[in-house]
Length: 551
Image (cartoon, rainbow, N blue to C red; front, side, top):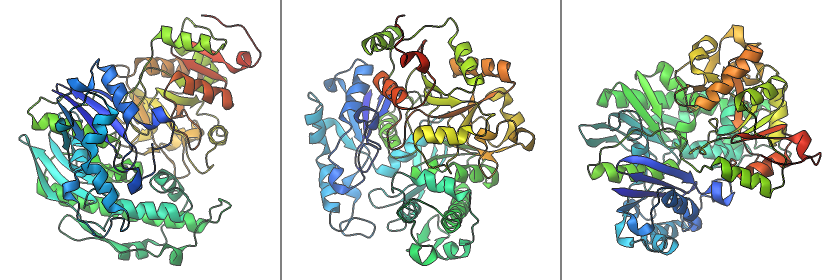
């Protein structure tokens, strides 16, 4: 069975292809359009489809739109309730109308597609499937979904067992933990439905001195749900000024909301465990990208194992919707093979791109050793290898790399990317050494948990230690990422450190680099020393010295 999944209704439009129960391809539209998050989450953008992402998914599998057996659209307009709290009072009907007409929009965007094969999948069920059906041993375990909103809810708790999904609880709007966090994001001067991760980073600089007030505004209800009383944010802390500066008050407010979010998630997880009793909890929805909360759940919650969908935000519902239809049809579902589900280029294609750009490059005999040497000399490396990642994390395919032993590299990389200086940078670490350096859930291949850096290592890898003594790590195993593993080994041989700084290959406000042109544009516009693109390297000193070119 060939199923194309589509997310388009709110933000992060994306497409995913599942063939015979196996994930073949998945990509976000932003990587093609170069527009961050693809579009803004307003009702009158609901007609915008991930046209290029969907077309690429089909091309990757050698399919035409007419070859598909089903298309799964991750929103069911039949579940909306006109006029309900939590909807846009002026424009919600437009969003619903677009969702109803999605089969025809899709058929227009993908000539040859039969609109009759398009199925609407409830938004939170798509999220749930993206977690429980993509995890190892698919279709087993409890699941918790939390985000801003779906059709009429903001939360779903349930379990997969015996080939069926059972719903335990679903929180109706307007109560929403995700929307509350979005409101705080906006109050703190960031872009809502986009910059929530900045609030999480800022929270580490504060103390939760508004926690008592937040406990009054946010509480669980004892039936698997919760209540969120509207917060007058300005009565607690004035909005961040236009000059972009933040104060201790802003950090304290962020810390207070973060701690209360963690407390509520723990209560919801305990309630869900009491109903389901599984040893494993799978998580999805935008709130599941809060890696600090995920770590609190792993450390203090009732589950032995927690698995988080790498594309936990709305992009992941494209994958979940496709998996749901395949599973519903009785297809045997294979675990998600990893997050590297996007575009790739052959060595010859990359060389052709470099030649066309008239860029001087070389093909070293040992790429890992060459890059490790540059990193050991404290150079910054743009790393472009293999298939691009699905989801918001750079996981060693579209990354900026640096030396973790130089504390100044935090400021240096944030300046390269044009980011706020309070934001941390993350490490990749060889899995076999991870427990020596970091405390927390292992393995952690998708950067979805934070780990405490052991005291004896904090001065050795200061660039990756956040102000609270933690790091959001990516563990690397040779069988899963052989090239990155060789790079880590080569770097360790030169420095004694099995850790490399890894942040996304992009600049502020732009999507992660996806194709070779993106990589060259980023490399050319930012003070990066070396570009490792496939088996080739481009050196900044030669590129801007007018050096020769060749293979």
